Length: 88
Length: 297
Image (cartoon, rainbow over all chains, first blue to last red; front, side, top):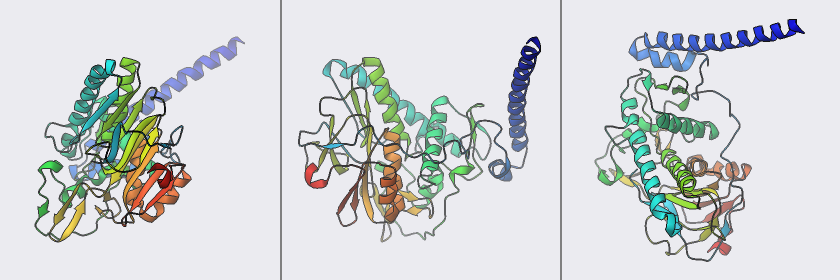
């Protein structure tokens, strides 16, 4: 039992260390990118960098999601309007 | 944001709600306006590829814009900023000359939203040099959502916020829902002619090619750019209204529908989004449980 607890504690430390390493690697990658010539650094960042830090640039965490429908579709009404939608 | 704003609430809480809505508009405008020299967006567009530190609010606005791009397979893409300049939309619309001299304009796809490197953990964003963002398709709707939620939280009452035709409901609606006149131009009298619908929660938004228009030589231009060509969208729909779970989702879907053209009806139906599409000839098609026109008129 005690051994299991120790293994669990070690696993937690390892997980934390991995997360910290990933974050640090992300920072290093950004630092490396910013050292590139100005005309290529952005393209390199866009095309080649792995997703080690949270980014919404090209992650696929919600691929397949879509604008969500309302809880209830609008209903027709003949009453006076409180406001108006239309292009601005 | 270059638009009119309307706040609807119980009289006892209206002043407080209005204060909060105005504060939200000011904050979003300062973060996201393409036409303010002091906005974060302007500074980012001039950042020449360097990682750029941003506020939490601007990060949220960027995240929303990128999510809209993913949700629409790039039909709504924030990297249309350069295309906007090329088509002549280079100033606040009220200041824009309605007639421009002719200039050659070729199709050129926008750089694409996948190039935007947003790092929420670090609070930075980086764009490739030359890529410019325009958040017009989502920032105003985000302001409406945030303002309605803030006003409801502060007052405990139901609040309807209308920012230039982008509507967001916060909290409970009146009996029968919030009643809205559907029009192509958001300005004018809510008692004007046109169909009326009532909605209870979420958002309702309209995108149209009929209002922000100008001429370049002999050609008409409007502000809804098709990212695939970098030119004003051409297609069968001139105006699309959508109801969704939020104003951002509603405006994202409405703008995407204009850009998608003939595919829009199926795209909206597949997502069960109530929508009203007005064709170039004035014909109306509805999807997703939107009231049939005869019943709504």
